[in-house]
Image (cartoon, rainbow, N blue to C red; front, side, top):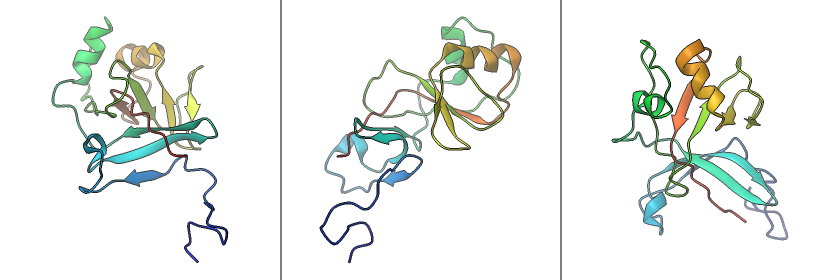
Length: 145
């Protein structure tokens, strides 16, 4: 028996939230070839994940903050990652424990996701996230059913 399939050939994996999908060069859709996708939500409505292994050659965190009319802290800022080929206007921030915001998705006990502008403000002005975050632009929305 395949460890991912039940005797009736249905999936025994109920939820992929918090998991990684790793595609190869042979991925038929070139937009997702050689991508590492972190699954942020997986339920009956679909699946949403972020590509986490592609650093943006165009956007920097300095530019994101300046574009939001926020000051740029003197601290070393993390790179901005390209989150996928879908919804290129969207920006999300993955971050660790020790920081909470009103509108966040609890991906796991230690990983959270938000697109709330307040998170950017807290990075720029209040320095509340330290180095426990990764800005991801844009969103990669994938469907696994």
